[in-house]
Each structure stands twice: as structure tokens, then as C-alpha cells.
Amino acid sequence: GACLGCNMHLPPQLYNSLFRVDEIRACPQCNRLIYVEDATS
Image 1 (tube, rainbow, N blue to C red):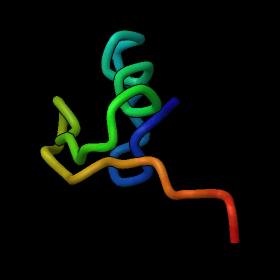
Image 2: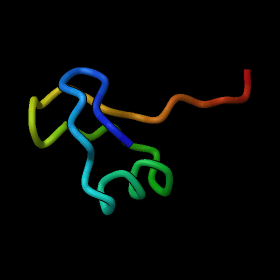
Image 3: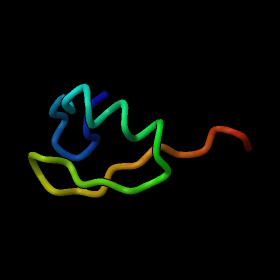
Image 4: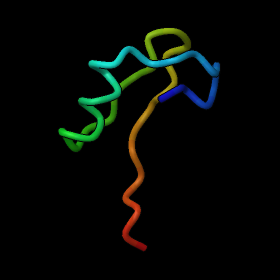
């Protein structure tokens, strides 16, 4: 996974936690909010 703001690759632990926990995190590089959109639409 990568941040769509700065195109930096996310650390694997952060990327995996986005799928496990329903929360919003910040990119460690640019501090933009990153989250996983629900694909059931």
C-alpha cells in the first residue's frame, strides 16, 4: 500500500492494521489521513 498524497509506501504493520481495525491513521511521511474505504457499494 502507498499513501495517495505523497506516494510513499506504508510500513507493512500500518498497512495491515488499516484492514484489521476500523480506524483512521496518519501517513508517517506527510501526515495525511489514510483509511480503507468500504468496497461494499
